[in-house]
Length: 308
Image (cartoon, rainbow, N blue to C red; front, top):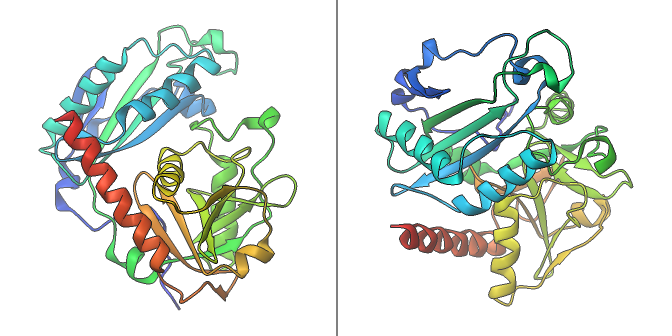
């Protein structure tokens, strides 16, 4: 049986066994990093998070990640109580405490905070937000780029913005967890999720692209996470005369694609080997995927150099 992968699989790093975690203003050992059982994030999934990559001492595309975080928190009336500069300082302090300078991944989590009673109403969160930052030493597992990801189309869909807008990078990820379980039970690595109209949308963890006859296609963006890496790939295609389209398309076009890949902050561009048991292209990263990966690597280097 083929070992299951995910787009967040990383090479083992022993340094992660002894991490210091930022929890509400204090750096504590990971074994002691705790929040209250009354916390809104634990109790209700009421919070937002961001994933960021550290390259050569700089957080790649920091401004874009903060745009998404602050917009999301504003939309749900969650007052972070910190400026962007203060968030940057928290991430830097956590990275420094763990000796992380490059090939590191941060998960920044902000919830509505501790509640007075174990009920839903946001006004019961009376003590301000809970802020947690985890910075791990993290390099993408080589098997991801060598073998690629196997996807299974799942019945769980990305819903309408009037149910829960997919643009919220919220702690409420049950929809995506269910999709991941459905894919795993189908013998795949991750779930390929459709939109409410049956068009190909995204996976349970990443944004999804296909390549057909030299063109790069992705979903309209109406029902998927407004991914930072997704947008960078679209921008890179436009800047380098690669035809790129945000459009509706079905599994018919996805099955017949020459290549397919996923985008995300952690894995950047991860090749898709098969969908529903059907091999995509050569079953590994194709020439367009490799070209975009190289262009993206150059873009990260320029962004990091501009911050240095």
